[in-house]
Image 1: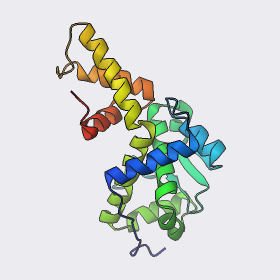
Image 2: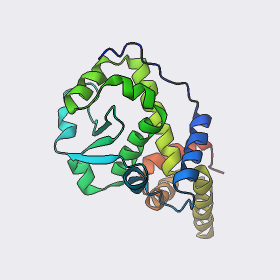
Image 3: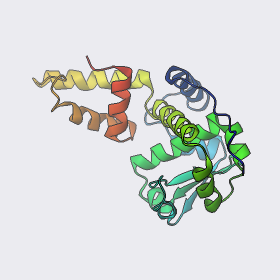
Image 4: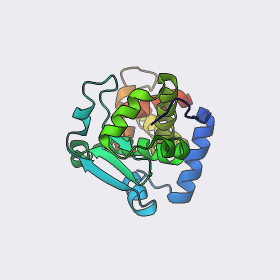
Length: 207
């Protein structure tokens, strides 16, 4: 599977925002929150989500432990750890959004990798140069964040939360208060509070 020469496209954070916004406009123009990422993948894009027993354990002894999903080179199947699929947590939503990002952004790359099974993906992960693999993952993570937590909606909901906090006599400047705001927003967007924290910080949205 010679992967030494994979060509990872250069995509800035701002460009990834633009691409995510265009994707939302095409596949979920109502912009209703939370973004129905599983429905978009399954119904609109006709990509199969394949629950796979013990997928995370396959990578448990590798440097990249914690991997609980991957997309095949055909771009038609997303394999996801069965436990994550069954629990349907916010983490699961981000996981499949991450794989969707690879399909949308890195189709050329993944088509050259010839990955059609768990074993092939495990070997491929080991073979991709670390710098290129990190770049692929950062782009997918950033796109997924923009997709599930669009900036316009994040700003609007954050503003409402701050208004409520201040109306109760508290301040959003209080570091003890912000985690509660992030948890509230995470529940709204159906993502983890960590995702919200990173999105708010990266967009510099705190007043």
